[in-house]
Image: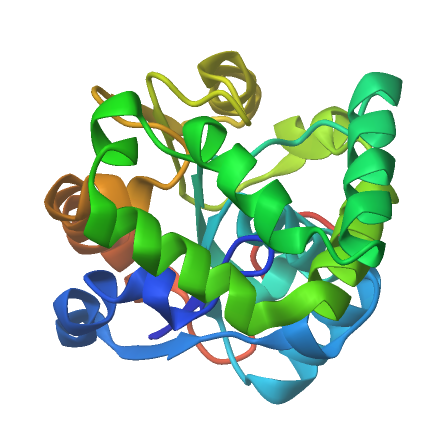
Length: 250
């Protein structure tokens, strides 16, 4: 089994530092960086599929969950299972596009650090936003990505389509999890994914904002472990050479 961890916007392996060692007992674990190397979501998905053979378990947080849905859209037969953490199937509404455009302007003016610090209360639950070490890790991670990636990935996100009409066609195991206090992708966005995908499991994590894997690492690990040893293992056992999972390209 190949487990691909898909980071969020301007994020890297720091986001998955507690998950990588915990998930290795289930199979090969790889933190993808296609979002850092490609410009648009379709290109990211195509690159990921070209670089990794066989059936894939996609675990994506925020933008990573959006990318997981794009991978499924391109090759549903390759996707063994998906975990979508603090993510959404919606397209950006006009007001969010305006906010992203304003943010891009600030970044291009050299005000990225100011923007990132203002974003902390939106990214983290208030209790975690008071943790200096966690805030420093978050800021350092996005600063490593740099202004160019932050702008490019925001533009990629703004261009995404609404995937909600395709959700009822998903036939692989899907785990949906969100923070109860997520201000960036509120719980109702996770709830609508779980309600639309047949058999999907929904988990809401309390005292948690947008960054589930950093804010509630033990809880996320337990959820992924239960999911991988249950429905994903069963799906893996049913998948043989040449098998096709899911409908043709929607």
